[in-house]
Length: 167
Image 1 (cartoon, rainbow, N blue to C red):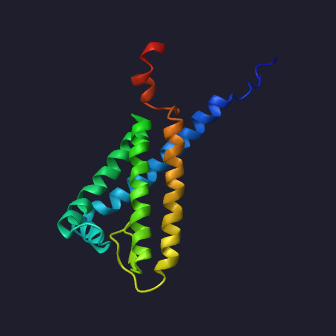
Image 2: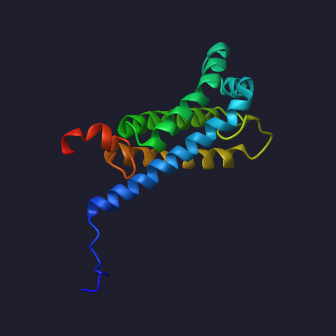
Image 3: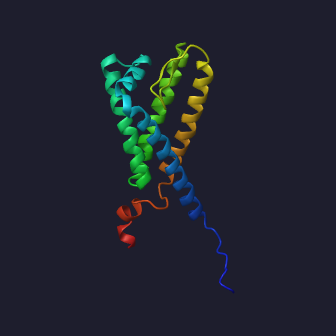
């Protein structure tokens, strides 16, 4: 051959690259969601209060802590460290977000979810927004589940931390 030999793509390689894309997508979304809330943590807390799911004091605390959890998960995903555990944490967040948005929708409330902003009340069109928010979170939940099932990805620190026997 002349040096341009084509190697067949293995299924494991496809899974690793798909997982890498999933890991980075989830990291980007969680990182962005956390970073846009950091400048005004009080407003983030007030957004959680609008859901009327937990007492106001707890909602303020949740709103203040949640952006840091999202950012921490994003950083770990970018690094590819503890990918399965971090993906499970992200999946739990997505289920909580879906449940919270569904709860607000079922109670006839009209609020902005605050996912990528400070949130607040919405005067009209909330139902359409809820469908989009829930659909987005379902896709992100599927991405997290994919990572839980296949945590081995390219350019991940997990390879150095977990694969010590293989070196």
